Image (cartoon, rainbow, N blue to C red):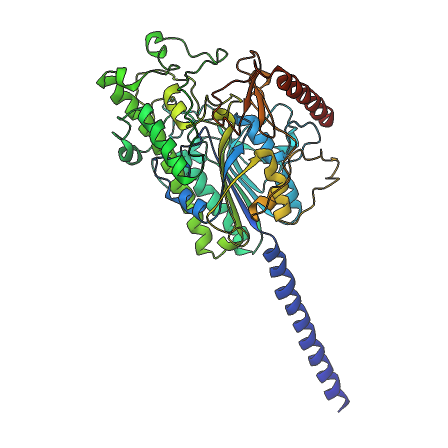
Length: 528
């Protein structure tokens, strides 16, 4: 009888012990996953304000349309006007950093996230090596600045791929569709890598930096065919049509004036030597009606290839959205889409033997088409003017963000880190290993996502170097062009920067210049 009681006791202990372990597993593990949203950040490259469907484009982007309809659009959102400063601010939450800069993916990783980087990586010189993808992400494939989309004719890419910490040829980049096309391959890698955290119910952060539609202009033939002939109407008509759609969508006011057409007057960006007669027209704006039919056809192809690159990017965004839908995790997944700067007008054409689109060619967009991409704003990538620094922003989070929202409150790329940390309920650390992280310089726009008013940041900063610097406080903005005298605009009254008020309001210029100098000193001091 005594042995019976002993056996019964053992059985009871086993039953209750098993039940205790089971309850811990089913309550604690899923609860941890449920409280942390998955995060996907998709960064377009050299794609202007009106180059996507939700912001007035004729380019077909049904998946970005879906994100916009199911989330929130910012009509006023700033970047740092060029590739490397925008990415540096995006990942660190800093306008200017130093040795204590931190890649926020490291913070997420320390809090249990699985982190994946698939795409372009480009840092400012101030960025310490510990922020690089190879030193942070669980899985990463990167390339610097830009590279070809098809396998190049010279066998080697301008900038090779780095898989985690190993430099590899394109033949070793995992890809499912032939011929190789970079935009597709980056999605192939991203989807296979996030399978692990999804299966294990672990929150993940995925960065997708497609590099599209940065030059060289290359696209799959079937995508180009969709747009061939659609641009024979010319850039003047495209700008007018996009402006009207932006007004109809409520993204700009009905009385907003379309900025005058711009030529690229960045005298510090030269071009490769040779073919001078052809190159002479690339930086210029010319009325479309003055061109002959052969040139119109050539330029129609140029823009059709650019549109095809954006289209292919959108198709791949659709693959990602389909994946999270099928896995049943879309409701608790934050998806962000934005661009690093406005459209690019610079002549980096290698030669003119091959047309835009093909693998053998290395062609770039002309200034007049880039100007159309930045409709309704003035100027281009690198410029602190709105055409370079002001681009689109879309964010979807079904669990928290109400659909079909449009806000006219202003955001900045430097605000994304604090916003995502707040969304994930993660405190910015005071210590990270041996690093004392530099204080964030952006602020969360979570109130805006919740349909509320956020406290306006003290300032916004952009423009590539001080030669193109932009500084904004409230409605007032100063900006330089090629290191010339400061221009002054009131963006509430003049959002497309048509009326320079510097001559009539010199005291306001002095006030903002002094404020900028003080702020730059603060930023440099904080970076040390």
